[in-house]
Image (cartoon, rainbow, N blue to C red; front, side, top):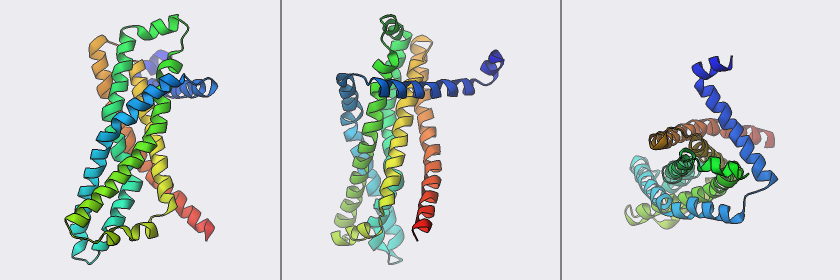
Length: 263
């Protein structure tokens, strides 16, 4: 029976192994967290080294979003809501999404390639032979760094996006700064922050665990490392897009229920 599922449903086998990895890493992290030096190095690699690419992506997204919004709304007399549209879109959708894509390409691929190389060169087996848990030593620091730094990077991307929209709106379209910012505190709700934070946290968990799983299960030498890296990036992108859709529906339905209950 096991051979039948292995040969005909490899996706189910991989999914089970992936869920097992998440459970094992969570248990190891809660029971005995890895050393601070390991976590610090991953926090720096995931967070600090990603600031430039996240800033550039967020800023350029804000520029395009503000320009498109202004051109579409100007002839309707609604150009004053350009800042609100940029803030809402960056906070609830584009901020976490753009950050997920950038971090996957810069950090996720590196995680998979590094762990994959260690796996095919038997360095992971060497750790096991020395009674060192690879999940605690290799995966847990990356998991912690991904879940902690991704929401912070997403906030940074959101801020840069709003700033990019401000720059083009004020200095190119000659919009008053107060016109750009005034609607934002009025119509941006606290729940919008919850939506952005929840998406950022989920994306961070998905990216770190998928890339670590693909790296730690790599086989086939140098070619296998390349295959695992490509596969990890593609799976992360698909997972981010699909989970973003599910979270958007679920969180907005939750907001509607909350508003009905409060009223």
